[in-house]
Length: 378
Image 1 (cartoon, rainbow, N blue to C red):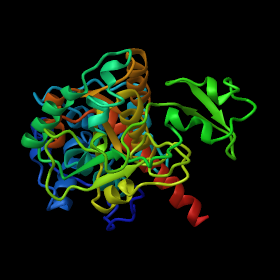
Image 2: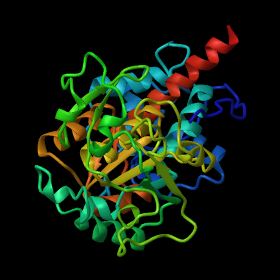
Image 3: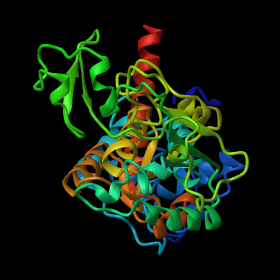
């Protein structure tokens, strides 16, 4: 998700404007309707609105007021921002570390941060809503959480009917007959000496074994499922398919499993998903489907790793074990992603609900880009 940071140059002369406190207050609810076509004028107006002492710079307190106006919910109420996180974000945009953000530094803040928060580019990734996971050989209703996978269809369809995503993708498990994850194929490969199960004939469904490889790798054994071109591999008949939306096929290599819609489990190969998202300038990935603690969770975690602002839609996802579902959600939040319900999606996609966690995630990605540029220059 590398972005070019070299924008148009701005005059570094301190910005002076007769901006009243009422104008600053006005900005607190104008971010959602802010014109970003004439971004230079809007940028200068925004800078002036929060430059309270008119010194041509934003200090930490003034930046804090900007964040208070920026990070708001649909009802225009400010989200609390942890002071340490606020300082971390300030330090990222204070590139020369002089304790204040000047006009040139604010240009980067505006173009690469504020504009993307106010006008995100959003993708919906629908993960593995396939027959075998709903009513077939690997129906999650038979797993410990006893979730009904079909329950994801209604909220996903409602989202597709009511929310204008910039793009939609559907991932599918798409396994060959001899796939490594199938319990009935376990005797086809040699177990490594470190495997807790030493004789493949003793392995049972849902056991984890270590295959010899090379290199050695651990593999959970599943019932045969989602075999290419089978009924079980098809998307549920009631799931809405957006015309022209790409299908992302995963698990096609017989020797490696693939939970994530981005990479296989060993990261030997990537799918087309990330390049598709990059090509469309996507900033935000909304992820849902089956199963929360496996393929949905792996996709969400890789989305975070790749730098996307990542949102897991909880009520449009179902999983296998309750404990692992909660662990997956916590891992995502630890990576500055968010977990929401489907009724919260629309205002976020529209830029009317702007979460500080996602703002921090984007700022941290900008920090990486700045460091990369500095490394390339040196």
